[in-house]
Length: 40
Image (cartoon, rainbow, N blue to C red; front, side, top):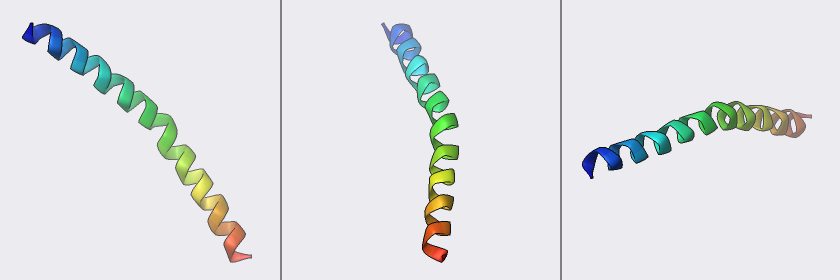
């Protein structure tokens, strides 16, 4: 049972890291765009 829990936790962690690889750059681009709009 513990091995099953570890497998589930690893798959959840892997999907979380994969989503971070896309969301962090996207948030940075949006933030940069907003800063440029405010600066004008």
